[in-house]
Length: 443
Image (cartoon, rainbow, N blue to C red; front, side, top):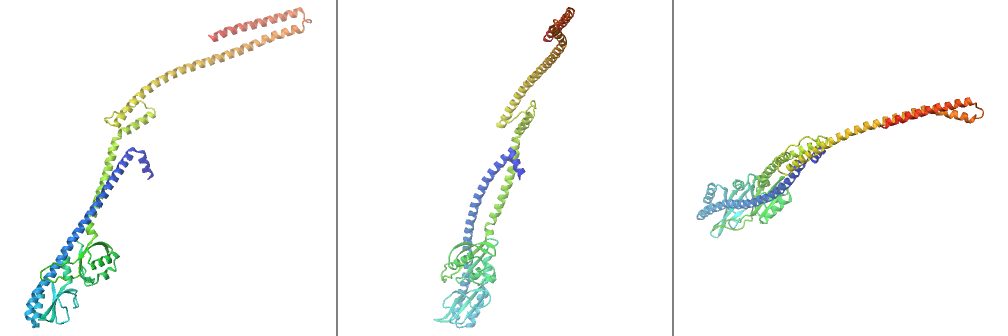
């Protein structure tokens, strides 16, 4: 990670590419989030609208089944009235109703006079399969003689209704006002209380069940068996048909849609768009990198040229640039700078050579002067050394004459004077030789 960070910090191409991609990624993310938000909202609104239509279609489908049973029962009922005192004949009509209507699973006559006083849908008293019962009281004049009970199988009713699915995993449900289930995909749940079933689910399911029992209309998000569902519900309203008993049944119908069915395509599109976006960003990253890398090729050439110039290679030419942008102009200016620097360095090199040559001459002159100086010193030393003996002799002779002037004979004094004269001449000769040699050294 440190190496990558160092590479990015040292390479302008990586930095520019990274910043461009970061800006584009932020803009793309903002656009995608906005799109996902409004698209999810639109999908949810469409799901609510479709669920409302599904509820209407479900109510209409159930009501058509109930109406067909009511009408078939009413037709048989009016045929039975002329034979109200013939029980066998009435039983025969009940059997015909059962055989002639595919929705009716049983039709029998209850001769108990304490049963229902009006026609309508009632809870069955018979044991066995879960059914919904349509009852019609039988009268002989003003006297009640019994009740015809027409049973509709809830399992068959559920099957018929559930065949019209709004989505692959959706289902419909119909409950009475006492909470018992009339329609459900699980036949074992028929006639069971929805509040009992909802105890095993979260509180939203219980609240949804209570809302349905109260006759409310709307939708809620619930969790069933660990999965998220949307429950759309409304009261069951029957079609107003002439001669039909319009007593409110107190039923409520619901359509249950898995969240995956509502947002499945949206989620799939979500991942598809994200995949395309990521692939597009990667492709754009590579395109930006290669484009910027190519655009910065003159800069890299300038970098190498500057490095070579720093190493002392001033004469290496910088290639021409065909670009007309800032990089091209920089390369051309750098090229002029290199040419000017090369010219200046040439002049400096020639001047340096001249200075070196003159320095060498001065060095030779200096060395010659030092040699002459050493020669002069040696000469003076030798001459001084040669003059010391004559001068010493002169001094000694003079001291002898001075110290023994009265005691020394004339002959000895003459010899001493002659010795002083010889030594003096010798000193004079040495001085003349010194003057001549000094003139030679100075010349």
